[in-house]
Image (cartoon, rainbow, N blue to C red):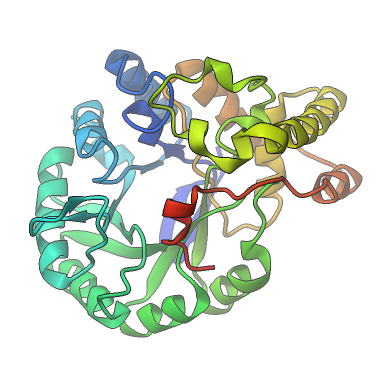
Length: 325
């Protein structure tokens, strides 16, 4: 496994997104033992960047990682997020990045994770009711106190990134980025590179679509968030299936899996990018981390970049309103 710097934070070139172990996808929370084995196998393979959030569950994903990392905390660059739980009464799925809420959130996350510090603490979504300067200042205080090592933003726009960075240097921005979600390339990536901020792409495999294994939504259980995702419905699904098939065809040519091709393309976009493919299975984490050794030719990279855009938005209308792009 290779390693890169997100600003001053050294991380594995490929990380692990833990959300699906407890939240959002079919089978979430059904086999914590396998999820813990997956975390341990990731560490054996050299993965250091592990990502969670208080909203995943809510709370259960952080608790799971706390158990999985017991006795192994020093092997991990541990990232979690605040701001989608209002601890003052409104509860989960309510934006709140006020300094008081951040104070409550960080103490609770530290307890659940079984640690005395968080390596990378992201604002999960921009809170329009709290100036970003106040949020950045609150995280700066936590950094000064040793409870947080680095500050991150998720799905923030250029102006928010600049304003936050002026108060407390931003180490990384997390945003959806993959072969079929490339909207950040024009407006966000140039700002990150100007300011020396790393990029942590989530859903680098298109919520599983780019693995080539999703052939029907009938396999999703009732709690699977993809059932309502526009890219997985109706004509959009059929269009996107053809796109995934082109990735699968190129993978056959290269001699690897479609997931490895999709990740290798993403890694080729820069040395300041550390994707966090999510999984709850040992076999998948082995497959994903092996993408670090996949080499694509310039011609293959160009063919992938020229694939037609995916059909449908990446989020439901309710969740899309929280994005700054």
